[in-house]
Amino acid sequence: MFGTRKLGKTSAQRKALLRQQVTDLLENGKIETTFYRAKEVQPVVEKMITLGKKGNLAAYRKALSFITKEDVANKLFKEIAPKYADRNGGYTRVTRTGARRGDAAEMAVIELV
Image 1: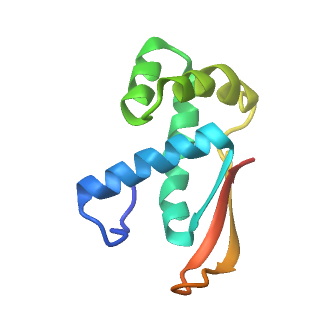
Image 2: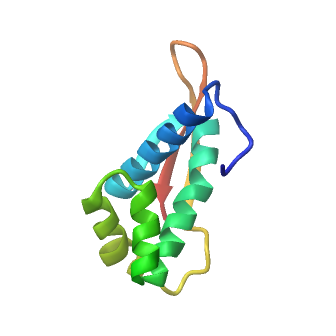
């Protein structure tokens, strides 16, 4: 898998969490989550955008095997990836927003640049 953080979950739960958060980030442009989850999501989103920049059928199928919604995969290949055509990485930004009120977990916003 991508990172080394276990995030208090089993491997199947962790993969499902990453898939859903990547899908939501590509769909909405930004999400608010804990800082460590954001740091785990960041390289996965960067890889998905790189697949979108390739633009061929094999890359589309590989992205669709990870992204949970087909319309988000279409958006990735038709809108998001062409926007970053001249950029070599660094498609996302993680900004810390402070502690969560209930359990004092450090929160962050991850967004597309």
